[in-house]
Image 1: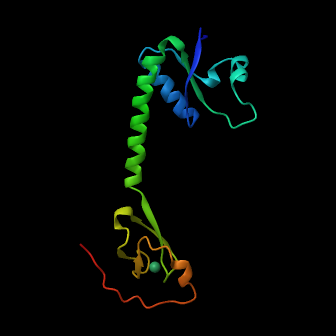
Image 2: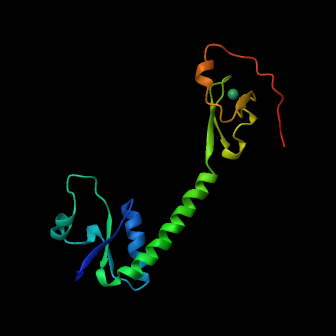
Image 3: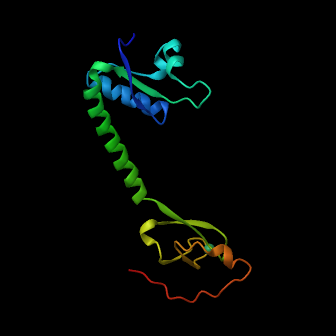
Length: 146
Ligand SMILES: [Zn+2]
């Protein structure tokens, strides 16, 4: 299958994403291909061979406006997912007492929690522990829990 007037509509982060977009476009009646589906002649004409393969999504130029709308919606959902995972992000805390890494939700930033390994107090979000190495301090702050 060939596109009559190919237009590169999107550069995906991965082949999987490229195929997701192609499927999404095709399910909406838009002819679309991931770059690897095009003939090598067409590919090399547009691609940068020496660089990391960029999975581009190609469509028929005539369907550009419909495809752009669909891809915008796709991007929006992707960003929503990205910001959702940002909210779930965790802070890595290194326990000064036992040296174990533990993970706390970002919303606990600035609080004092218990090390899950040794129950020592750990400061969530305080990244100055490197300075304290070799000079252990007594932690006698009150534990605060809501
Ligand atoms: Zn610990």
